Length: 63
Image 1 (cartoon, rainbow, N blue to C red):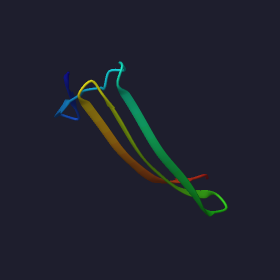
Image 2 (cartoon, rainbow, N blue to C red):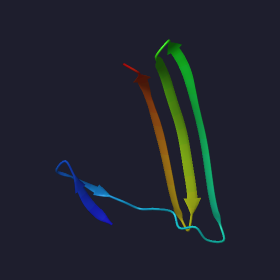
Image 3 (cartoon, helix red, strand yellow):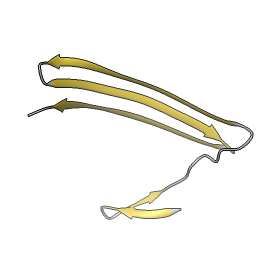
Image 4 (cartoon, rainbow, N blue to C red):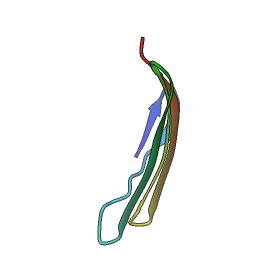
């Protein structure tokens, strides 16, 4: 499937759950201060000849 995001072409695909499907995810959070956290994670999924991987990270601050 192809779509556009902010004027850029984006190709989308997803692994289909079938007889051979695997998903792994690792996440973590570290408290930096009284109201701030650093978080991150990695994930991957495989199935039906498609592999999707992602990484996310950020800082969360409560005001």
